[in-house]
Length: 283
Figure 1 (spheres, rainbow, N blue to C red):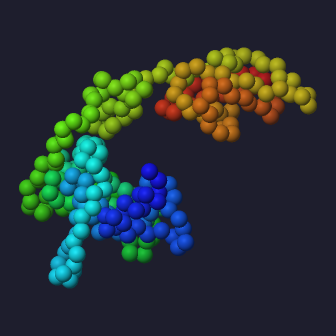
Figure 2 (figure 1 turned 120 degrees about the vertical axis):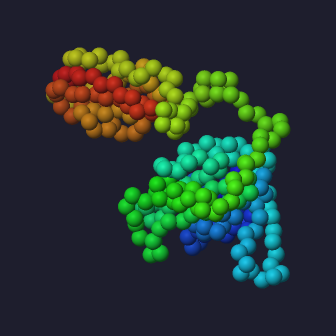
Figure 3 (figure 1 turned 90 degrees about the vertical axis):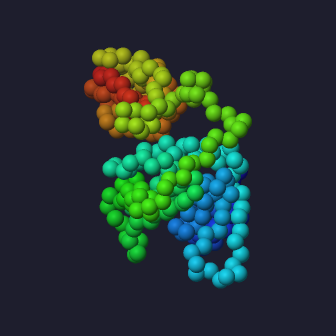
């Protein structure tokens, strides 16, 4: 595990990732922070379509004696888990479900977008962008590249080849069999995966709503106000009169130093986006 081993795995698969000059690989490459050509990206996805083994692409322009290699990038069980996830991605608007697994991506600054998909035999990659790498407002992999990907499979005229089945011995529990801390996701009415909130909404228990709190704000030794909440999902963001307090905290206590006397509104927002507020008078 680590960026250096991931780069080595890329090269074993015949892929040449591009990094800034004299820059060492960092953790960001695991999230797509590395330059990869569309051809290399498609070659990596041949591994997913072939049980974890990549195959060198060829388009007829290579020398007749060009070496064709293969490399194992994932074991069979891990490979199927990824296929299972990608095959459940909702098709782009207006496209029919074709039994393919696919992924999309959008570069920083909306400079380009891509989508790669595969069935049990064929892999197709799509790149969308400007040749000068200029920004394109509204460009995204799901909106711009994925529809072309699905249309490409349709226009190919090729019958869809079923994706590989679940390998024997794979641990694949049902959602209802998961521990409560892991059973957080389910499909919404729109078919998209959504977080399932299991904790009660946050509530500010101190100070109570409408409280008058004497902190000695007119003295040089004014005390900070201790804030307490219950419920909610960590981490938490506190705001005073609409302005965020410094940092995001996993604790259910915080402190706030008022800048003067008068009414103030205190708000806390949890990781699920739920909020609670109280209005207090500080003196």
